[in-house]
Image 1 (cartoon, protein in one colour):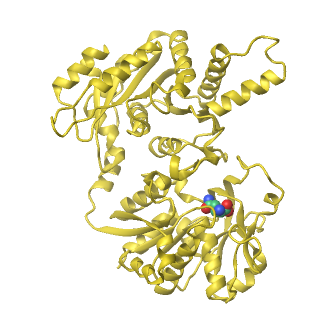
Image 2 (cartoon, rainbow, N blue to C red):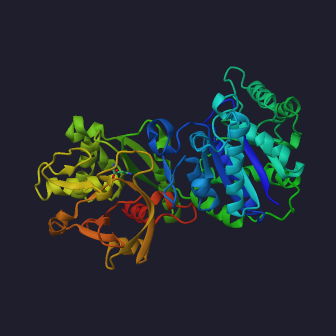
Image 3 (cartoon, rainbow, N blue to C red):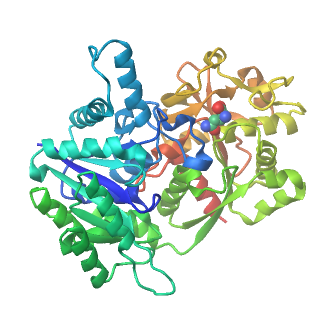
Amino acid sequence: MVKYIFITGGVLSGIGKGIITCSIGKMLQARGFEITAIKCDPYLNVDAGTMNPYIHGEVFVLDDGYEADMDLGTYERFLGITLTKNNNITSGQIYLNVIKQERNGGYLGRCVQIIPHITDEIKRKIRITTKESGADIILIECGGTVGDIESLPFLEAFRQIRMEEKRNDTLLVHVTLVPVLNAVGEPKTKPTQHSVKELRAIGLQPDIIVARLETGPLPQSPKEKIASYCSVEDRAVFTSYNIDTIYKLPLILENQGMGDVLTDYLKLESNQPKWSDWEKMVNKFETPKDCVKIALCGKYTDLADSYVSVNEALKHAAAAVGCKVKIELIETELFEEDNPKVELLKKYDGVIVPGGFGSRGTLGKIKAIEYCRTNNKPFLGICYGLQLSIVEIARNLLKLEDADSTECNPKTKHPVIDLLPEQKELTEKGGTMRLGSHEAVVEKNSLTYNLYKSEKIYERHRHRWEINLEYKEKLESVGVVFGAWSFDKKRAETIELPNNKFFFATQSHPEFKSRPWNPSPPYYGFIKASFKK
Ligand code: GLN
């Protein structure tokens, strides 16, 4: 028997609904249940692949190559599960399927409508994912907030599933913001009351409310007020608040009694939860005193969510090394206006150039890489970071002055980074990069091997350009070591400069597979080298 937990949001988006969803999953995993999670995104994009990380947050890539909403990254990191494209349902996918079916005459002359055709398609996808996952309990989070026009079909589908399933087999958890106004110093419950009213207007009554405060927990009186006005039990109102280590939230909610309420409401076996491994892991994040300072040189620096997996991977690595990590985002255009500004990197223990697209900010990134190479500063290059390291080395060591990626200069005389052959004819942008997990074969006696301790590695990719191997010998002649190759040896996967303390760059995005209890090898090596004085 499968149980369904729906998670909706009220008042504001961006209040940590994804982390609360994961915490619910973790409390159930701690009790021995198999969990999977679906994120419903009401936007009309088919997937997140074409969305700007600066506005929407990072695009998270799955093993199967699907370009997902970043919440799927949070699910994988907390729950330790590998998700597929089925775990993200967007309005774009739903409408595309329904319209394709209509064009094929699939509706036999009927008028195609939001109810029942769109809602049926949503339910069909939820049920297929549930079945294929084999999970005991499925978490289904709806993006955005109640009251958005776009989310209505999803919420209607949730309502219908709740009617179709037995009473104790579904739950609705509503997450809302409880503001505390400075002037009064009192948590205000009115927005929560209104958002529950909005939910009820579409036929949904929450069973559990998680109030999000800046500092918690919620005092007894507003808690009772929420319970009474929103028709939930007192014991079913919980608080989430700002914490340094997000992985601590499942423990906080467990201490508030949420695990037992979930068990009781869903009529699950009340197994004793096992938290010892998780607690040990959280301690590793919280106890270290020493800190490494890392410069993250990118261009989407106004929105921290643009690099969330990189940030998390750095934190996982630091916890494993036994230190804290302070990550500062640096807009690389800064280095372009005024060359000496690159000296600013001196105060950091390590520098990372993450993935990116387009030419804005590249000159600054190249300057940052040159600084690391020539000053022996630990450096980690991710995807675009690898490509720009090759450009830097070609320009400054091989003296190929206009060496470039054809992404930035299609007419360069020295295209050291060029489009993958299969990309040259492509015109469609959505889902057409080299995506997902690809096998790479590691050279023994390389830093790559030292990091991964394995001859074969499987990391996730998302790129159109790659190193032009016509320059292979030239690059090797100035000290570049190729540490891993695609299985057919046609593609370079990692590069290293063995003369430096730590200079490593990879064509893949290892951050996507980093887990809080099992850090990504390149990130671990990078933090270890940066921490060593
Ligand atoms: N823009 C580069 C490419 O498409 C790098 C992509 C990335 O960093 N993810 O190959």
